[in-house]
Image (cartoon, rainbow over all chains, first blue to last red; front, side, top):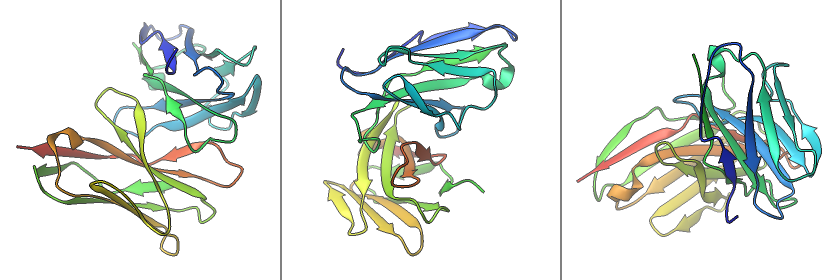
Length: 114
Length: 111
């Protein structure tokens, strides 16, 4: 596709449910990033992949958050036992190798935990 | 203290006004600097990179002062379409890849 796509666009979960958020990066972009944007805040870095390797997961807020990119293209962010404070927009971005300074963002998944 | 701090908003200005946004960063090792624009309920998009020598793109001018760890964005002749949230962004170090965002400053341009 022409840009980064994410699905679902909206997700409502009951507290305690597990959710999985998908990101399809731009073709050829080996670098992939996940960010969390709470209401009224700027995006905050969660994790970074280069191809299938997760090189930085320092931003993941707890062990309930897990990300994978098994074939180096599509990535999934999984949140286990969701809590209300997980409500946010989850943004995925991708970039060409060595061009982390130019990241292209997807439209995000808006997660609401009730 | 957050790593990137921005002017609190919102800024409400009439069309044609000049408006300036300021940003400070706390990590002196920060290497690269940007302004992103985010429209309501949309994803952030790169507006422009910021260099020590200053750079201009049409009505937009960005400046970096490394000594003061200060970044600015000037918008001249504001248009209604400039209404958005402007995010100050740094990359922490040369090997870094994560974008570190400020909270954002909201601009509303009215006719």
